[in-house]
Image 1 (cartoon, helix red, strand yellow):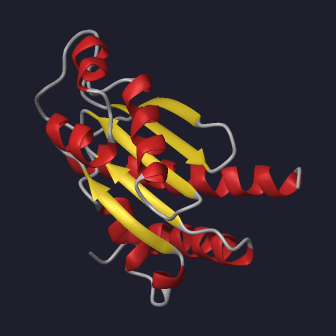
Image 2 (image 1 turned 90 degrees about the vertical axis):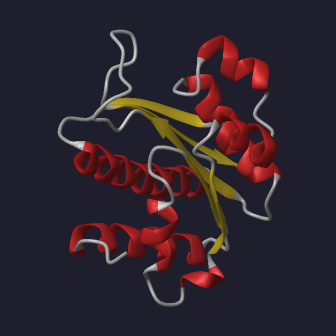
Length: 169
């Protein structure tokens, strides 16, 4: 994947902040299908920061790879704040990273419901020894637009988490 110049610039800013703060990052992706990790690893030299990426498109993968409780998925659905948080925390637990991003949502064109429409995305950012932040977003457009917006938001969210951490360190 060759990210757009805007996505590449976001990825480079995040990688630089991670380097400056000696932070490794992991991703746990559902609706973005590895695009966040792909965007980060498209930048030369990213291997010193990107620890690993989990593409957990199925509910079984979320449970097996990240430890998301199956009963949680059954109770609240894969596209939920609770599952997004559990994915981010599971990525930290199953990696050597200090920061993890997780994304789950409905990119479309099908699969949406009245309660969970196409474009709904839950994003979470967890850091070792810190709180897990969550965002719920509704993105407009086709499947590519929803996925791209989710990647942009995730990269910005991680950068903000690093800035917040260093502001109070």
